[in-house]
Amino acid sequence: MHSVTPVVITDLFRDNRIRNINTPQRVSAQWGDVRIPVQNEYLKTYEAFTQGKSKLEYKDASLDDMTTMTLDEYFRYIHEQPGEKKMCIEFANPQPIRESYIIPELCYPRPGESNTLVQQCFVGNRGNVANIHFDKAGHHGLLYQVFGRKRFILFPHAAGKKLLPLTQTSGWKLQNFSEQERREFLQFTGGYEVMLAAVEAFYVPALYWHYADYIEDSMAVRLRFRRPDYITTLLNHLFPDLYTQGILYKLADPARARGEYAPVMDRIIQCATARYTDGREKVAAVRALCKQIYFELYPDEPQQPYSLDLERYCQPPLSHFLDADHPDRPVYQ
Ligand SMILES: O=C(O)CCC(=O)C(=O)O
Ligand SMILES: [Fe+2]
Image (cartoon, rainbow, N blue to C red; front, side):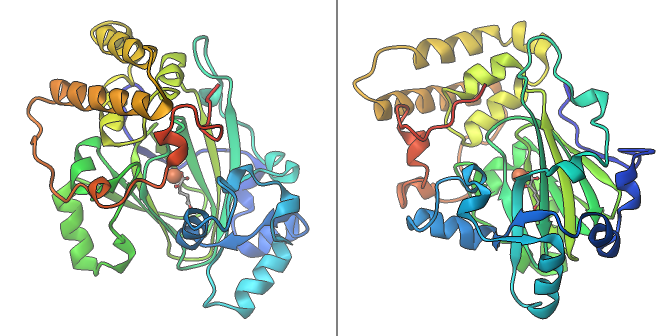
């Protein structure tokens, strides 16, 4: 975790019941009557949100607000409508699923870390895609494939400028690249690809750029855990862009964060706690400082971007981050 190194884990949940629940048939037998919220694939959902047609954060919605199905109903639905992409995204694991595994010791917070330990499930049929992004909440994570194959790609922080970035997302639709184009893109960006099979897991370091492609109907359990308190404090001030990502990458090792990078943290906190006329002015000041610090930390990185600065053409759709006082701005604990 301190060296920010992604890794495939083949024996996660060893000896736990979940490892035997590794096909849709077995999921149906064990959890067929478990109810999950079902929504359109990621991009459709996100587009509905930016057009004001859905709630701000799908994960904040309660089951009452959403279309729900039992897992059996979901399996029947995707069997009957194979062309429709439907997903259950970041849903808090229902009790029967939680009871099938033991959370690894690795995930429990140590002193000086956030107490949040998130347990979620993802279910999606073949063809669903999580476009390249990083998760701004800054937890470390394990993604365990319950059943089905999933192409998972991770990009090192240095790839950020090559990802056609807009806030914490990338403009590329990797799913539409040919095999050869994708290989060449991975060579260009330094990304690495893994085909995760049932019962295999990925350790996804905090704030790492990643992409998921549902090669087959898939179900995954996701654990998110152990954010150091100094990262929580910074995240509550920062805007989720590639500069924040690069700075927090350097701060991943607590010993180095508290040592050589302590002045960086002080500068950010000082800037973020100064007086501003409004939340937008504060965000602008913090973002400008972060950009400056980023280039100090990465003096050898190319200074010029690889793509148009998309923010010049369209404002990032994250008003709740652009305005530091926005009531919907998440506050991390
Ligand atoms: O597998 C998925 O759909 C989710 C991938 C992802 O973005 C995540 O787990 O953070
Ligand atoms: Fe993600």
